[in-house]
Length: 247
Image 1 (cartoon, rainbow, N blue to C red):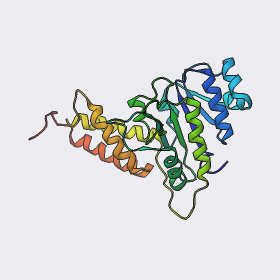
Image 2: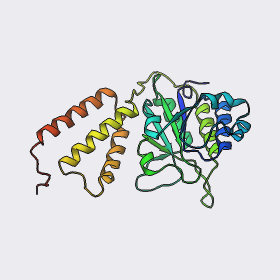
Image 3: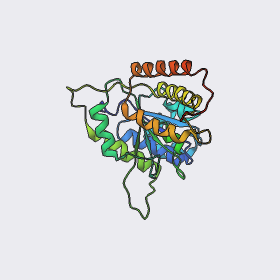
Image 4: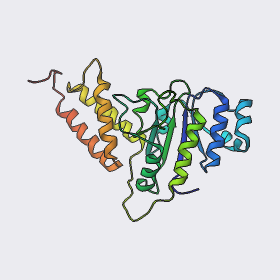
């Protein structure tokens, strides 16, 4: 196992097929990954899961269960959401090779990454993808672009293992955790809503763009503290604001 992959958790959001969970465990063990997180979904101890896990049953037994994606990512410092759909809020989508290369070159020794996969039928929602710093996809044929869940996990795990160890010599990024970023976004949204910057009918439209901006900035926890202090001051200074935009 190399240093790129040893701190990576594979996260499955509401998996629907027990067999897929078992095959994901097998794919992970084939490629040297051992941390599996499940966000609700079907029974991991279904006979079909055990059947397809083969010698990776220990990964099934050690898997962590979470009630939602935010809690599954809370302690992670780098989160990658996978999708096969492009759109307004699904930009800058990386390939598996690009994900592995970036992780190798940028992730520090304390980086705790998570690679997130969605439901077999509908993938991840836009809100779930907005929790992830990076977005990634597996290039496939336009006529039939949907891959099996376990196949997708295997391809990413293979590229992560192939990427090798970090070259060393550079300054590895030390990013804030997902929980720290979400606290920032929550405070930011409340503050911007209070001063009338966000549209009352659709505040998430702008907030998703702000998320992308700050995710690209790869903030550390000190920078988070500075931004949250600034927002606190804005909130205090706008205490008498009536909510109307000025011309």
